[in-house]
Amino acid sequence: MLEWFIEKMKSEFGVEVKNEEVGYEAYEFYHDEIDELLIPVEHIEKLPNPLLLEAFMYVDKEGYEWIVGVVVDEETRDMLYEVWLKDGKRMSAHLYVS
Image (spheres, helix red, strand yellow):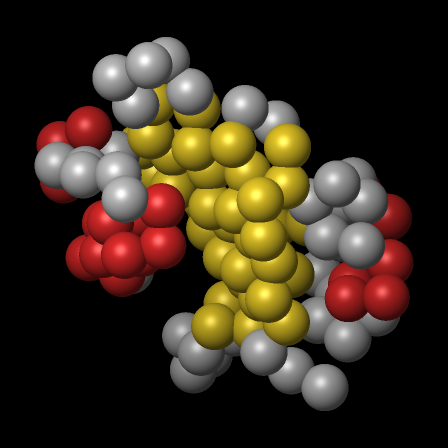
């Protein structure tokens, strides 16, 4: 997933990132613990409860904090949802399940 994050930062946002500059954390959340900025209600209803959210973080040369939150299936590791934040503002989101 780290390689995916680095490639997407370059292809989607034109930002070059090195492996050692990326932070990573993983959390398990219940639906009622998720902020709508991260996952809107219409999307969260289609995701497992609880859900595993993996987060990749990077601060660019201008000081902007980039975070991608990825919800993955704990058994298959399939990506179910992704949300991109730049300085706390949602840049994009994609739901991979219906």
